[in-house]
Image 1 (cartoon, rainbow, N blue to C red):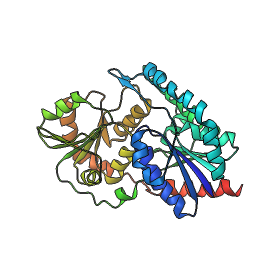
Image 2: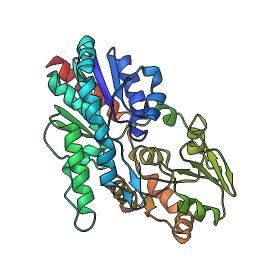
Image 3: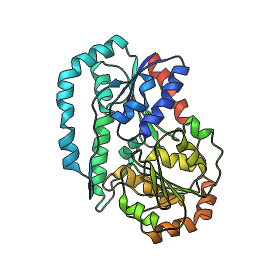
Length: 343
C-alpha cells in the first residue's frame, strides 16, 4: 500500500515516533510519503525525504501558552495553502495513496477527506476526546485542547489512542494502546550514574537557578545549548541523549508524553514541569502524580525538588510494578493499515 503519514512538527515527540513507525511500515512492504513542518522536524526527518507543509505551532509568553499569539502568528498557514494546495494535491495524487495516517497533523486529515481515502489518527491527544471536562481554572484550557484535537483528527476511520489508562472508551473504531518505545530506548540497559537529566522544550531560567542552588549534577537539554553553569551541564540533542537518559537517577522536564513514556519504560522517576495553559501537559503531569510514579509543579521550588529526589526509592518501587508493551502501538497500526486496505 501507499501511505501518506502526516507528522506534527511542534516538539519532537511525534517526529521521533514517526521515524520508528515509518520504518515498521516500510518493513511491512508499504511505501510511505511523509508530510511535516518546522525546521527541527524537517531536519530530524531529512532521511525520509519529507514534503514541507505549514502547520500550527504554539507560542508562549510569561504566563504560559498565549492564545492570541498562537492564533495571530499561525495565520501564515492560510496564504501558504492558498498558494500551494493545487501543487500539494497533484503531488499526493501522483503518489496514489491508499490510506492516510495523521499524528496530530490537520492538513493530512483535510487531504484524506478531499481525496476520499481512509484515515487513521494516532496520538495521545485523542484521549482528550474521552475525558470529562475538569472544573475550575483548567476547564478552558481543556476545552481548547479538545477542540484542537477534534480539528486535527475529525472523521478518522480509526483512532489509535496512546494512553497509560487502558479503560476501553469510545466505539469499535477507538483503540487504546500503550505508547511505542523507540528501538534505541528499548536497547538501553538502565543504570544509575548519579546525574539528573533535565529536558526542557522552552528555556526556564528560574528552574536552572533553583538547580544551581542545589547539590548534585544536572545534565540539561534545551534548545541545543552547550556549556556549563556551576553544577549544570548543557548538551545538544544527539546520540549522547539516550545514554544520559539510560544512566540518570531521575528526570526533571516538561511534561511531554513521549519522554514520560520512556521514563516509565526505563523505570526512571520523573518530576514534571508542565508548560502553563497547555492542558495535554497538565494531564500528563497529573498522571505522574496520581500514579505515584513522580511529581509535578509549574514553578518547582528547591524544597519540592529536594523532596522528590529524597523519595526516589519509593518511586522506583512503584515503577517496577508498571509494565509497558513497547510494540503494541506498532502492531495495532499495522493491523489497521491492513484492515483499511482490504476494505
